[in-house]
Amino acid sequence: MREHLAYPEQPNFPPRYNIAPTQPVPVIRNHEGGRQFLLMRWGFIPGWVKDARDFPLVINIRSESAREKPSFRAAFSRRRCLMPVDGFYEWHRLDKESRPYLFRKPDHGLFAFAALWETWHSQDGSEIDTVAMVTGPANGLMSAFHHRCPVILAPTDHASWLDASARDDDVATLLKPPAEDLLEAVRIGTAVNRVSNDGPEVQAPYDAATESRSPPAKPRRPVEPPAQGSLF
Image (cartoon, rainbow, N blue to C red; front, side, top):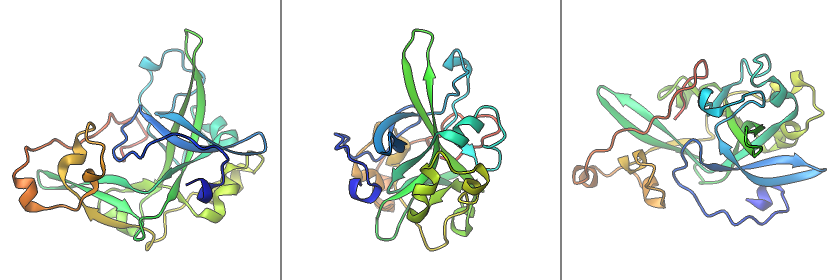
């Protein structure tokens, strides 16, 4: 990941397979003339919020309104970042059943979500770096599962997205659906529904025989932030 995203740090961050909202996620941002790797809380909190308990959990930010909404417009102009991943999950609702799917590149390679970050100052004086991915209209593959999907930046656009001096209008042109051939959808088992399951086994392709011997697990759905929509 260091070679792909060009940051100097050598973080001790073990592989994660089932990160949930409010947990730390890896983030790449521009810092002091270079790129910096750090962990941030997944769940954006605007700087003006006094008590985070009174603010809804924002795990994704709509690309269409990020520049205008008071909660996000400063971050859109000055605090853009990358959220590196090699896959993400979405649940396909079929009748009364929700089937989890893993979305990944066919070569299992790395890609990066467009994201916005903000440092939140709590009443006790502590600081928390928070982040949320940017979402936009789904491409053809994703539209069968959800009407929105994460904005996945082309590697050639990473530098432009991270450049705090770039014009908002220019940056906004980077926010578009992923190419149709970028990702594949793989049905996986319901182990991913439990946040406590965080090993590579959660990404194993669906096996009907194995699933029939396992106790049912309810789909994992985080609290939906108002006007932001759900993604996972």
